[in-house]
Image 1 (cartoon, helix red, strand yellow):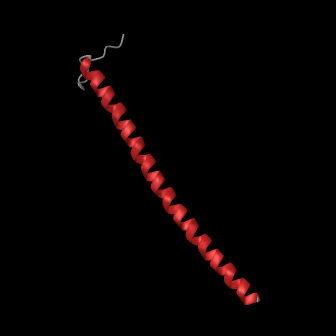
Image 2 (cartoon, rainbow, N blue to C red):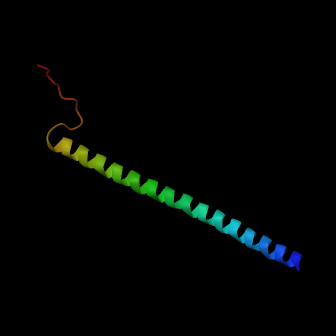
Length: 68
């Protein structure tokens, strides 16, 4: 009877270990998705800033600045 309990506990532990590993993999995938979305947002904001600079005549060219 004790052996049967140990066998059940072992199977349960193995199942838990599998589930934890699956959850770790899912978490890793979610982090990758969040990083991709973050990069998309940052690139979009950068493009908007470039568009604004071009529209006001800066166009990515360094403008001379005078310090008084």
